[in-house]
Length: 205
Image 1 (cartoon, rainbow, N blue to C red):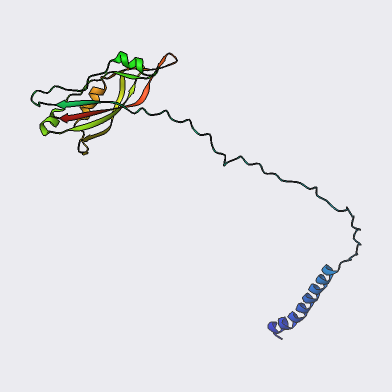
Image 2 (image 1 turned 180 degrees about the vertical axis):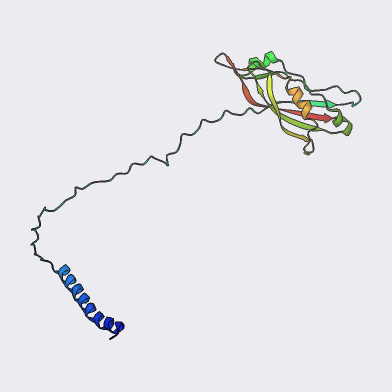
């Protein structure tokens, strides 16, 4: 009998023995002594009652209207006009209405009002004279505590037919810077007045 034949016949009994051993091991593993234990009786803790609560949400009054800001001071209107008329362009001499007596004005005005004392007529621009242009300029400025003017700015400048132009601006600003006023007085203290306006009219007769 050859070696291969001997190994074939001996493998079958060995396989059967190994299978039996595995089955024995598995039976041993699943064998458990189980003991049933009665559960403990439940404990009655009674009804749980939550107290009544009220949730109140406090929010800031976002819709409350803010306090109205104080009303801005009334803007002074145009105080006067300075008219510059040229009768003979060859001999230009500024002509403007005679200034009223400053002493009389102080007596008639309400106490504390600011009053014009000196108003200087502007020089008629030579460019406008050569072109035969007429126009008007409205300026705004601040009357200081000493009665001088400050921050002169042009609000409107145009020819007398309504065409915008800047040819008269420089002359109007220089003249307004030389104005003198009686300052506004309140409780014995001089105050500045903002937004005072004046119109310059440049015309050729």
